Image 1: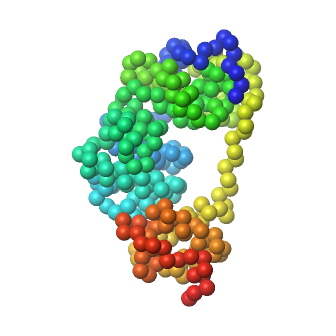
Image 2: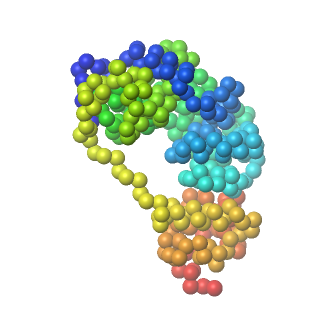
Image 3: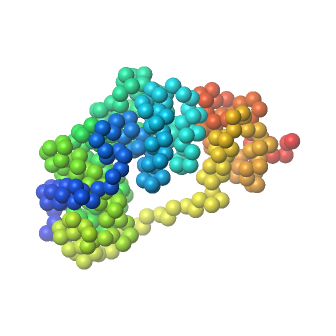
Length: 317
């Protein structure tokens, strides 16, 4: 990572909070989870849906989800298969199972109220450090550093003079973000949302809109003349077409659309490569996203049995 210029400190930067708060007041997108009265359960659902999924794809699915399951107990009262079915094409469907499992714990152990304390949030199934902090900050207004890839990019450029943030490091990233937060929890929550918004809309990975940036006058990277990074480039995302991910998605689509078990013969029609098909199906079974039952396969209903299909079964009738 390129070293920051000597004139910029990587510690507390009072100008950052004031500039971000002023900019956010007029530039923030109108998103459901930012509206007054949005429930903590909705914030948790939105944060899980937003992992590796674009905002435009999340909003309609989130609204449908919350109409059907306005509380954690509403979701927990139905089998996990319904969560996977409702997840539809958001991608990474394991998140639906995690959300269902978290809903069950919230309903049973927290009286149907999403917990507020970060340790309690971390104890929920499938909830990591980022999501726990995000819920505590954006649902309850508590003061915690919240760091995602957009935040790391803004901090790297504005404070460290680097074009890209490099690998995530909680020991580096959380204290750096913590130092930028005002003492007031209310202002701190706005700064957390604003710096994410800046990274998503202005300080983007490619072609950042520096002329529209509210902190460009103080940006260490800009002041240094936009030096190129000396670290490794981020790996390119693997191609989706023809991948095991695509085959998994095709199998799940079959299972979501069926009210009775999908047979071996029907599974074999999904993809011509029997070996890859078997690998994808086994991974769905291992992840708990599919269950082997008498007569074929279904979405998970909490009664998984051992898988009975493999690529070798493609020779059977």
